[in-house]
Length: 166
Length: 164
Image (cartoon, rainbow over all chains, first blue to last red; front, side, top):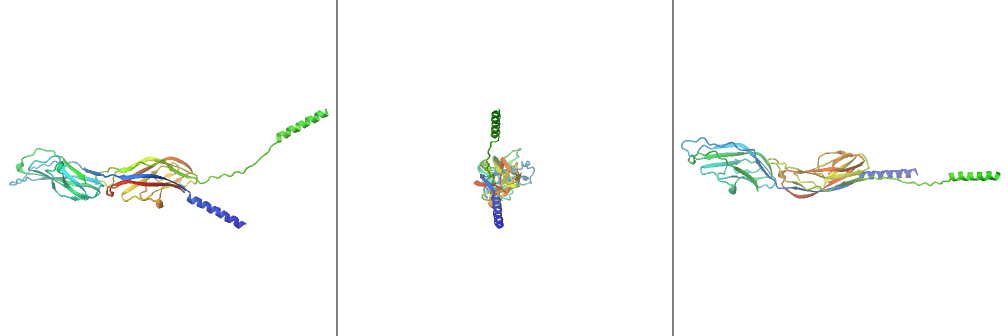
């Protein structure tokens, strides 16, 4: 009789343990996650004035000047074939040349590219094959050249547009 | 006279008899309260869509949603907890964090559930006291890196489990 009671008590206790182990309730929520295509490009500011001040006797090509005081940064998640193009708001007059060189660690830089005649309808590739991700603080180098035969040039404001595109 | 006294005596006895007349019945009532675990949410959050970033940063601008809430009732113990998991882990480069507010327990704060599945659910609220906690805010935060690429609308199921 005692054995039976003990057995029943153990069965009851184990039943309680099972109840404790499985006690739970659940609730669910459905989420929709998405990441849109994102293209971002910015520059650190404007370069210093590019002023040609000297030349070499006997050479029509005056001594060019450069500026590498600014940088650009990009972020894009679209593809691994993205590029940066550059153009001016309006072409330079004949005898003046402006080249731009964009460094890159996520793509392939085209090196120094003459953008003297590149306008919005004829922008030139300056970096290609850019991989997804970010590339921060990459150097922008401008080089401004002029011929003596082109004459002087009063301070002229030009706008360079860098476009991150696929 | 004797007759009168006898009559009055009989009346008095009958009165006493009436005052003591009573009957009782008993019932045995068995009471029980089973273990009760209940958890519910107010609905589904809005779509979490990342739309922008900062040039030069691989971390895109994360988005959050705190439009839903959860409610619980439990009478089991003072050490109950809520765990959370996804139906399947997120791909590398995408991060989903979850925060559950609580007034009856200790919230773990913002917890990364990107890789939490049914077999690896993570604690969100612990030491929940017996009783009810209604309409506690659920906050989701979704982040992504640019290098992970775009993500078309992806349905995910988050399971909150109230357990001991």
